[in-house]
Image (cartoon, rainbow, N blue to C red; front, side):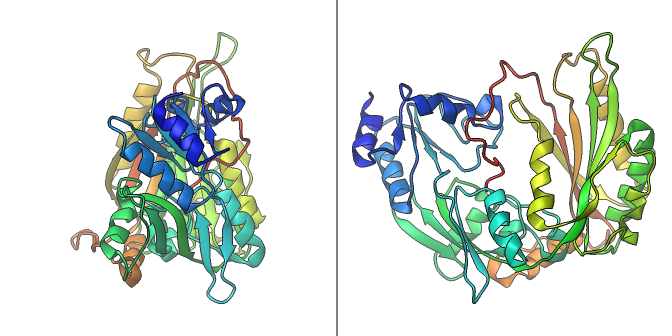
Length: 410
């Protein structure tokens, strides 16, 4: 055993996994994307901030030693959440979720899944704005309440020195700002304290359409999501997919799929009808449901256990502008191109809206102390829209996730 893993095993008995241990292959195989399944010298599984401090200090004091931090294991960038030959600090055991009954502040361990969070909050009639808490974080509640990071009021952080500090609006405030978008570049967040809000059952689900509905889909998206004002309870994530035929007996299949939500207990809300009334529909799960039920559905539609890649672009969305149609046309040409390898996971084009209302709510969060980034005054109706192009390639040998856990961790 090399010096760093050996020293860590002495300092953290029972919490260091090396390649000869049976659990090593399970941990490696549990990453969402195959290109993240690297081979560190050891995995460290801390159960406290103090354990994380020890895990950080030892590699930091060793020349040429490298380490990575795994929260949810969903990063598609090799080296981001795992590392060859170094130390990977796996946060999965820091997954406690608790609620202060007086303030409704939710304390979330840095390794918790959103499935863990919703299982605690749903029965209490509470919710938080979900998403990447050290990024921006967009969820079905962003139109009403801003981005996920805006609701974070405190972070417990382990610095490179091993010091354990709090970062909030009054204590280490510059670090607090940096962590809202800085991901793990400024420290290891071991706990988030997040504002919650009352949330009962609401309407939502997945609706799938054939490609013949593409024009109606784009028109509905631009009209509803690009409007100057819209119902704040509407949230829609629109995706287009192309499935190559596996052989001469299976035809190629192009289709679209929407995640559609109305965050009030209203069935067939008029604001959703531009999407829900599009016909034909190949599949629909629209219904009233609890938070944990509806959000739990998301993991069933994720392309796990593949080699994945993505690129993004951001543009202003306005009714009639036609930008979405142009991007869809480029994507379709690529999807059907003979240059694209066959037998691969279908490419996916997804629309993730960051609307002026969400940005306004974000800027109004005084505690977040983030720089103001208001929409341009000469484009009041424009909604900022991110296009996510997922090019998911063939998997190399199928391996199921060893943990069986929800990988949508913070």
